[in-house]
Image 1 (cartoon, rainbow over the protein chains, first blue to last red):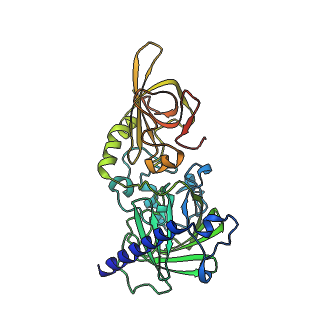
Image 2 (image 1 turned 60 degrees about the vertical axis):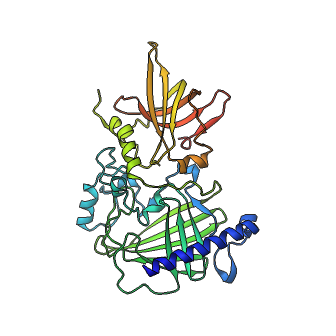
Image 3 (image 1 turned 30 degrees about the horizontal axis):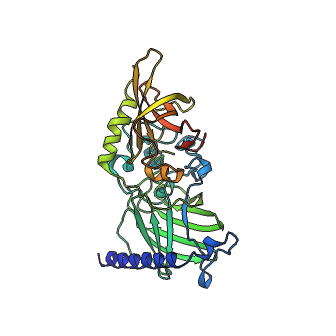
Length: 270
Length: 107
């Protein structure tokens, strides 16, 4: 609890500082499209609001290198352990080859459970980094939610399993590397229902490959659920629309949507 | 990509109503809803309801909660429910002055 208060205080300070800076002047990166994407002391400048490239339909999900349409099929190269494949194929997601519009088992849709990481990057909302020397905060429009990434230190010993895990980070040249363990096993990795265990060790690598483009590389290491390490990638585009409309998951709103859209659309054909 | 999939809709076919009368827009999560009336070939009024992306996705595409007002008559293009019910998922709206609001990028 004390850590939570400390994080909240740091976040507040960071946001106030960010707001003051934004009010005083436009950041160099925002001013010049040719600016070298770096800030003080060689720390890469990841500033800006990041989201799906609009021209790609808003979704654009590449993970593992099966398309979601192949998830769980014989063409899916994801190295599932048998139980993980069986679990994937038992789910009722609203995307992928088993897409269904009714009776979903998706914990995000069914319960408004925390969407977790990395799945939050598939939700068509935006995120931004607040880079402070000790902690990088990632602020997500979805939720809205934030994660603290403790910089340049080791994981806490034997962290309790949580929805977002225990994240530490470091810079490797122009790349922010986030290392997370300590997940619970309640989230899906993606919209089609790929599972994971509490042994998931996730690495996110963020690199601004040009002023307007952010590349995220993922490494999944979860020997309990997958026979070997596998990878994914997603590209984000710099957004200019503002970050004002938070996306809150509300069970009462979802229930209204279910009654007014999902139920009539899934009713038997007359 | 929607909050949920689009398995309930005929995504291969675009349904178009040249004159749809807006009744209400619900500006809400997980999806906005656009209620409108159209007059069919028999002269009967049909009530339709189509889902749209949430506000967080519509706002960057130049929509506001006041973009469609009750009584507006617009051209509306959407993918209809597979089961034949008067529901769908919106693609775009065209106003009489030619202005287009896209709910999703053109497919």
